[in-house]
Image (cartoon, rainbow, N blue to C red; front, top):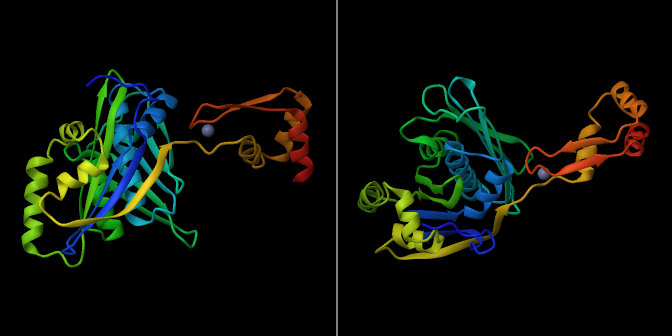
Length: 290
Ligand SMILES: [Zn+2]
C-alpha cells in the first residue's frame, strides 16, 4: 500500500447496523485521519504508532457503542508501569491523544487499560482491564465492554503502518443483542475467527470503508443501517481561555511571583503542541479575579 497525503484521505466515519433477526448490532469505524493527526502531534514512532492507532479506534468504538454523546477516554499503562498512551474521544467526533513513553509500551502481565466514560449525570463510569500480549487492545476493549458494561461482543481494531505513517486504521464491534440465538451466533463466531483473524488484511481489502466492512461481517444476513457518525477526525480542544483557566489552579503566591518576573509565559498544549503566550497582563487579571 502506498502512502497517501492527508488531504486526499477520505474522511473518517463510522456506521452502525442491526440485523433483521434481532441478533446483532455492528458498528464499524474508519479512524485513519484521526490517528494520523494524533501520531504526528505526539511524534510517535515504532510500535507506539500501531498501539496508538488501536487504542484510538477502540476508544471511539466504546463511545459509539455505549453513548455517542458523551466523552470516553482510553488509557493504557504499559507493563511495569512503563509508558502511558491516551485516547480522548469527544461527542463532536474529535479525538486527541497522548503518548508518554521513553520506550514502546509492553503488553502482557501488568499492562492495563483504563476506560473512563462520562455519564449523562456527569458522573464517571470507570473500568480497568488487563492488556494481554496475545489479544492486545482488541481483547482489552472487548473485556472492558463485557466486565464493566455487561455488553457481550466480538471486537477487533487494527491498522496498517509503514515507516511510522498510518495507512489505515479502523475496527468493528459486533454486539450480541438479547434476541440472539445459537445458530446465528455460531455462524458469526466462525466467520470472525476465520475471515477476520487478520483484520489488517480485511481493512486493506475494503479500503477501510466502514460500509464495506459491515457488509463483509453481515454477509448473507438482512440488516438495516441505523446510524451514521460523520465528522470523526483528530481535533484538540485547547484554547487560550482554557490555558488561562488551567493557570487559575496555580497558587496566589506563585502567580505573584510570575508577575514580578514579568516574563511572558509560554505554554504548550500536550495534545496538539500548539503554543500559547500568556502575557503578564493576563496573569494580573487572573490574580484580581481569584
Ligand atoms: Zn491542544
